[in-house]
Image (cartoon, rainbow, N blue to C red; front, side, top):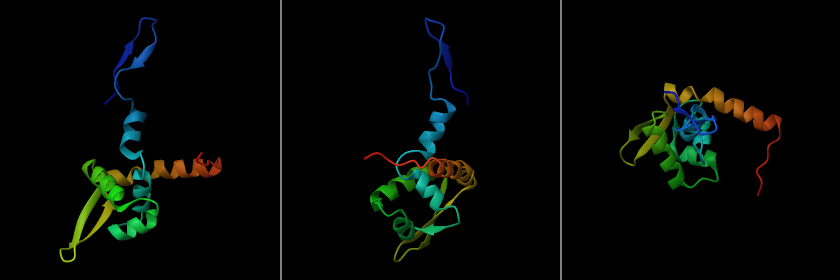
Length: 118
């Protein structure tokens, strides 16, 4: 899908729909999505283990982001046992395709010593 481009009254081109970068950032951007994908890179991870690895994220937030990633086809949820309920999450092939991008972002951040402003 390509973004629709229109010309304004001054002859400048402008996108009328989200461009490819915006669509990608909506998919893997946002709080915790990239970190979740990155922590699933080595294979299935149980929910509580993932929550421990993410540290600052609430379980509610992690659950919401996992549901979004699952609905977007990036993550697969598997029920391990019913009593007590235990689930694990793993990347789909589509989810794994984002790992190179996230690794490049991590390297870029480390190379430039990017720090968050408080």
